Length: 121
Image (cartoon, rainbow, N blue to C red):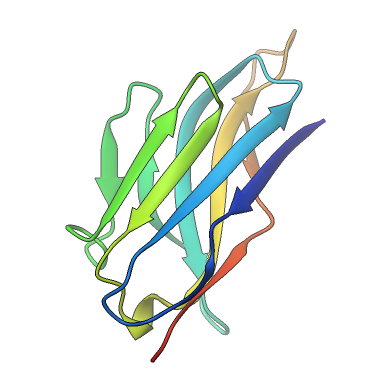
């Protein structure tokens, strides 16, 4: 009853920019932490950017200064602005959100379906 739908991936040249979006929908009472992860074949999924409900942020060293995470609580949406993209940023990007459904007390982590980002000339 909760879905996270990502958009905005694609092919971009080195040095270019992309903006990813992830919208949560369904039976939602509140959303706590949200984040973006990425994964390449044969490697573990890694957290690259996180944001709390009050918009405190944290970043992996590999993207600090190039990527910016933000959220719109009214739209239940989290964004990832990616600038200065490098070939090593190529991966499948996933969003994650801790969501509480109505009448429940616990937050549960939900994942988006993933969106491919390819950085290549």
